[in-house]
Amino acid sequence: MCPNMVMVTEIVTNIYLYGLALAVSLLAAELFKRMEQSEVIGQVLMGILLGPYLLGIIHPNEIFSFISEIGALTLLLIAGLETDIQIILKSRVSATILGVCGVLFTILLAFPIVYSISGDPILSLYIGVTLGATSISLTVRIFSEFGKLKTEEAQTIIISAVFDDLIVVFLSIFVIDLALTGSFGLHRMVHVTFLILVFFAVTLIIGILFAKLIGSRLHKFKSRGAIIIFVFSFGLLFGYFASLMGFSPIIGAYFAGLMLAEVDLKDEIIEGISPIAFVTVPIFLVNIGLRVNVSIIAEAAFLGGLLSIAAIMGKVLSGFPVGKIQKTDRRTLVLLGAARIPRAEVVLVFASIGLELGILNDAWYSSLVVVMITTTFLTPIILKYLLKER
Image (cartoon, rainbow, N blue to C red):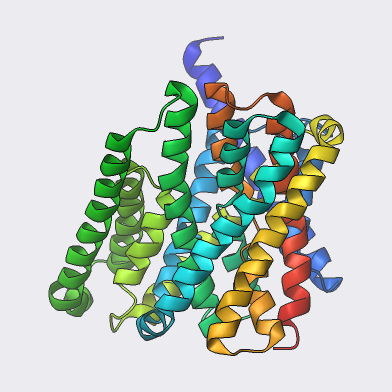
């Protein structure tokens, strides 16, 4: 068979598998919705079922990773578009405290667990910092299901999750330096601080330009779908810019949406972008399931269970300081923390880095996979309970 035929066959096969994944994720979402459960759980379970460790129908590959990344970026782009700038200004103190406490409490809870088992302070610190991150894509998806994405609590949670990731990126570089060199590099702290300042400076400048020059002129596009194409491409490009700065691309996508949140055509833009999420976000959730090695989960259940408790409690407890400041009810302060329980792809990224650098062994890496699975499954259940009466 000629090389071109092999290439075509592989592409066609991946198209078929993409269609299959969409179809079964729809069935799973519908089934779980009728059972009054979150569709997120069903779609992740479908990924596990179809994945290489059970039925072996779909294997993780570049195509699915690409579509999954597009889904996560689109989800955060829409979240940014639906963000109320006034609420951000109002809740910036709360979001900052929520983010800082979420990372700090998680490190304080995870560090002694890992250290008591391994006796390795660097490993303990790395795992603690890794678990401090928040995979906000899943939470945004759940809030969207319940029609709560525009609430003040949701906006505070999203902003605090951005702070979570920024803090974790900042700290992880120092821990990696310490692990590889055995010393603390002051020059790295200066370098990372500079990158963060550059990112926010560029975001602020572009945001001002959008508000004054571009936002009011979007309606002048005449070609069909031009506004949607412009916004979507801008979200992808700003996600790439964030990755160049050393941050997750979804942070850039969120800020891209945030810049456009005040334009007159915001509702039209959201309506146009949403269909992209409909056909990509399910793959993001299925892809999480595809990467779950059932045998590894069994071996790492004990370590992963302990770390899951620390990961969950670290985020839940972070809502209490904010609750004291805002004087909100107990359900709200638990919601503020619990909504940031998911770790998903963020933990897997840092776990992979740690494994490649030799900071983590297979057992600790597998335990982080268990945390990802546990928090992914428990979050929809917890949020369903907290949101259903609000």
